[in-house]
Image 1 (cartoon, rainbow, N blue to C red):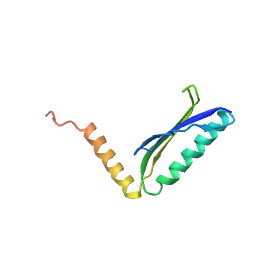
Image 2 (image 1 turned 120 degrees about the horizontal axis):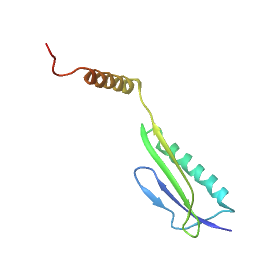
Image 3 (image 1 turned 180 degrees about the horizontal axis):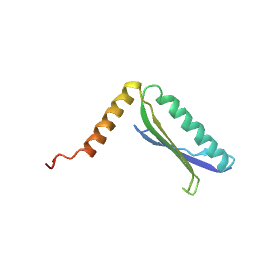
Image 4 (image 1 turned 90 degrees about the vertical axis):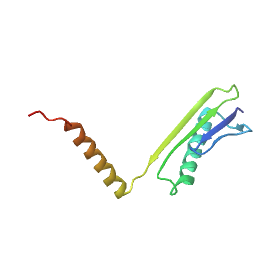
Length: 102
């Protein structure tokens, strides 16, 4: 059976498996990568409000056979109010010229 190497990146550390995992085929390795990605997200939550995750699967020839990533952005109501105020200020600054003609 084919062997696969998994590399994961959770934004804090990049890890490449030292040993290759034996899987029946590329599809099985892809499903395992999806499970790994879900577990990574579970480990990050609820401690982070923003993170990017990635997993890459390589076959024995070091060819990437699958990759997946996940981006998470969580915002509280206060975060959204702050962003709305910033956007409103930016819009106002873009419309008002600092010099007025008389």
